[in-house]
Amino acid sequence: MTIPLQIVFRDIPRSDAIEAEIHKRASKLEQASQKITSCRVTVEAAGRHKHQGVQRGVHIDLKMPRGEVAVTRHHADEDLYVAIRDAFDAVRRKLEEHVRREQGVVKTHAEPVHGRIARLNDEGYGFIEDSQGREFYFARENVAAPEFEQLEVGAEVQFLEADGNEGLQARRVTAGKHRFG
Image (cartoon, rainbow, N blue to C red; front, top):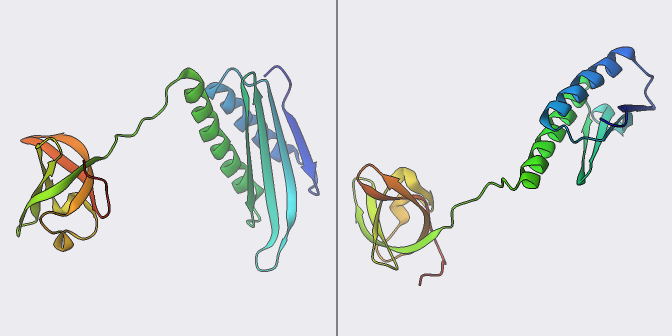
């Protein structure tokens, strides 16, 4: 970090042990990205909850040349270390996502395929035909909604295409009002 780690205590007494924990976790963030220019951690008593007592809050704000990542976590737990751990875990996930986006590595999701149920078998499997006439095998376990027993021949469905051992397969099959072309 080009700017040293900043730790602020609000309505909580300063603690060497808490500061050491924050320093340890902040140094691990630098392993995820060398581009962090500053890190500010605020530890606070976030107020009282009528059933859970004093809430502890941890806010982490990371700055980088091309953006900022921030999280806040509140816990009614008396153990401030739990709030610190959860906040640093959350900011690490956001930081890794930011780094992936910056590098152009973005998770892509398969586009659903539309079709109609061509055949059903009482043994818990069936076949779907898409608009190009290709048939996809699916089993009871591949049906997301409704239940397999509620499916009917001719019903419109959407699904994710997959290659199986014996040909095309349909995963995450859902029936309902889908466009079928």
